[in-house]
Amino acid sequence: MAIPEPGTSNEGRRERRARELRRRIHVTAQHLFLEHGFEGTTVNQIADAADIAPATFFNHFPSKAAVLDSVTAEIFEYLQSILDEVLALEATTQQKISAFADRVAQEILGVRNLAHDALLGLIRSGAHSGHVAPHASRIRDPFASMMLEGQRKGEVRDDLDATFLAEVVIGALNASITNWLADDDYPLAERLRETATFMGEAIQKQSDQDASGGAHARRGDER
Image (cartoon, rainbow, N blue to C red; front, side, top):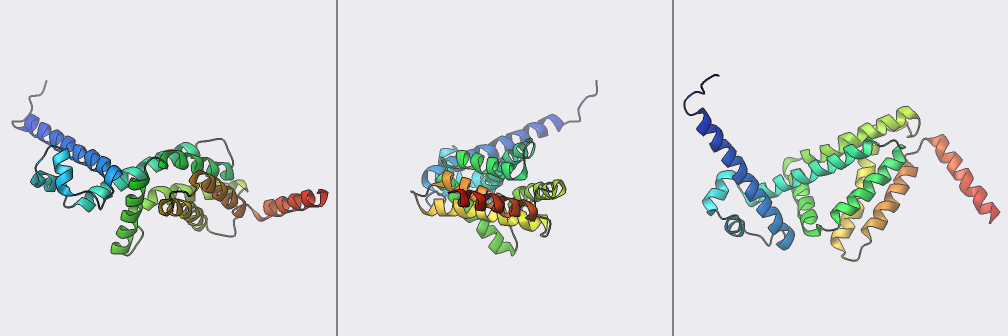
């Protein structure tokens, strides 16, 4: 058995403690953001709730905004995991969009404050950097892959780029979430479901759209 170099074991423990402390600050801040919002939470409150000195906070995060960025990254990582599950379904592209919308509605309804601040943080990040924040690619890229696969299967229109279609669908879903964040009475689950259905029809291959339109017309004539 190899004998570890002097200090190697202690250094490993220090790194582990640093990770654990950073995680504790992250989770504590997330809970406070949920309860009081980003603007309503101070670094001192986070430090006090995490049972650390404010100086210790700044050893791990340069600012309160940096913690929000960490929380936002985790939210998008979770959304990506939901999307990965949806992509694995044996279903059409349109059905996958609806399934993703339903899951998002279920997960987001209980975290309005945090979702609001995460969205604002994402917008701020994009505005400051001059481009879309990197978190967004966690959702856009898998969506683009889903659109491309739908095009290959003949389900999705191929007269437009798959990435563009992904951005349009995501933008429409985000619009429903933004409206919900601004209005307590906004029917988020219903709107996300309706948006998913509408966008699913909008991205259909043209021949499918024509057939769908013909079916709607026939039903109208029967009435």
